[in-house]
Length: 427
Image (spheres, rainbow, N blue to C red):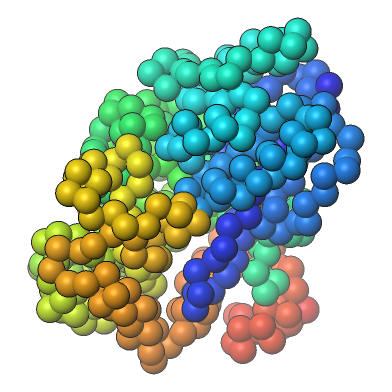
């Protein structure tokens, strides 16, 4: 049978550098399909949508709330043409009831060990409206390598620079952060993949640069350090969410190729300042993730926080407005208080205010959010700061012999910078 797998487009936030990473969820799902299923993949963010191609079943994988309405529109068109459509992915789980109105079937949970049943049901014209496995996680040791062969790699570059490949070494999260839906989606238990499976997948990834997309690597110190030890021989350069700032962990992370990490900046404390410094001491860059609009923030708090970011020498900063996604504590609280005034899911992109803040108006919070980007990147643009991180990783790749030149002349023209080092020139 022929299955068409679709990742819907979403509108990017204005004023930010736009680049597209190869999506992870769809190719992890594809790896769970029976081997006899012939899969074609369309990422609508980098490819044109075509409804006339030959397929037996359409699967729509949706990660973001800001994608879900576009996913519904795609499904409506395929169903109008007589095709069966099944939805899955994070945003499907967050918006399951609405999605059922646009789908023949909705799959909730993790796909491993379940797709043989789904495909058999489709063949027998018995596709269920809902497959709900959210509370029944498959054994984590059955998670195989993602189907990266489905990507058109040429589509995932930014100004001549190949984007990172996405990879995960664990599932679930033992933390339950206020605006986050992870505990609802993947459970509160930390579920690391067997290390031999992690090594197998790493060995099969041709790209030298990775984004480890685990919710947090700082969930089990011994596992975290074992992961970094196993990664050292691969000489990959990688990005991740927060890691522990214990010197033993940071030393191993640096040896394993830590390029930069995402660090939540939630106050102006010395703890945050010293934590960023410790990352830098080990040659690890920091992209601060800054959430604006929490109930404990006044306008003065937000202004102080933005000034603080300039003081602690972040390599990059990413600003978001607090967004009450369904099935989070934030949603429950704000919905109960009648403070959510916009339920157009296209606007739930973490860059548009959809609720009434506690201490300021929604309009003022939007202004502060827009101003935060302009203030932080006033002296040096986001692209220029990205270039410095790119230069740092290329320097390290040249040092350890893993640099793969593509078109350095194109990169130099695109960024207005010179990537040559140690007397090298090149095109």
